[in-house]
Image (tube, rainbow, N blue to C red; front, side, top):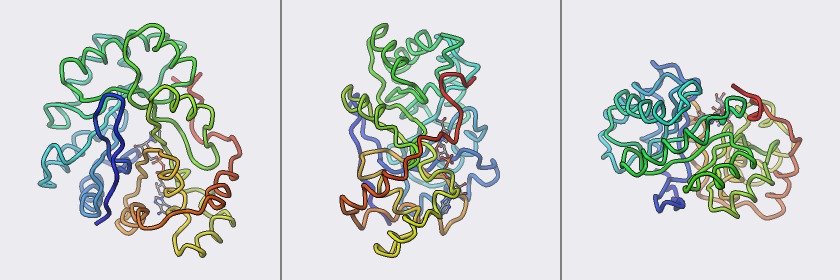
Length: 275
Ligand code: NAD
């Protein structure tokens, strides 16, 4: 079973650096997929209210026989639940669906700057953290100006910012900002949604050198950059393959080769306009 290192968040909470994402997993497939993931050593699950599978995630955790403190659970506030009181109520509903009495990490899923309520929402998150309903709070898809507003108008620095990040979009500037302000970087779509990134010739030939697949090389690149990742798969062999990245190291020149795949192109929506 893979041994995954932890990262200490700015609130002191430890998060496993490698987890399992359940976006676009049909509710009926969540149990078998998470069962395979727990067996392979995953102890961190990334879901969201928007994914509509929190109930099945909670059932899979209960069925695993793992203690509550052995599994790190993240969920995210739905876009139509912004606002202080709405955020507080929405976390209660998530806990009920998950069958948990507290969460490990709660994120604002998208900033929705056109609505301009994320500061008020964040104040609700601060209350949830001080009441112990979640051990840590963070954001997702925040750009530097959104993070600056939180810093200027509230008292808590987000523990993480979960952003689209893969070799084609390495997010150097945002990662540097995170480092400077003690915010951990979580990478979503870490293997580029399994698309043509993984058939890039440079990754295929590096894979031959290390005896690893392109997906494993890209995941190892994230780990060495210090990113927190949670690739998604419903295929047991891939679920095992993806976490087998703690038994080798990439040479600095090969890290650089992977970083050179940068095209600056997003696969997902632009956080400044989405929602
Ligand atoms: P991903 O980069 O994890 O790619 C998943 C896809 O890659 C799978 O559907 C499968 O088709 C393929 N795949 C998986 N393992 C493979 C392997 N070993 N070899 C070849 N192909 C493989 O993309 P994702 O699911 O978009 O992102 C991962 C997680 O990030 C999500 O499940 C979710 O938890 C999170 N996420 C968050 C946001 C956000 O806005 N915060 C947005 C998207 C995703």
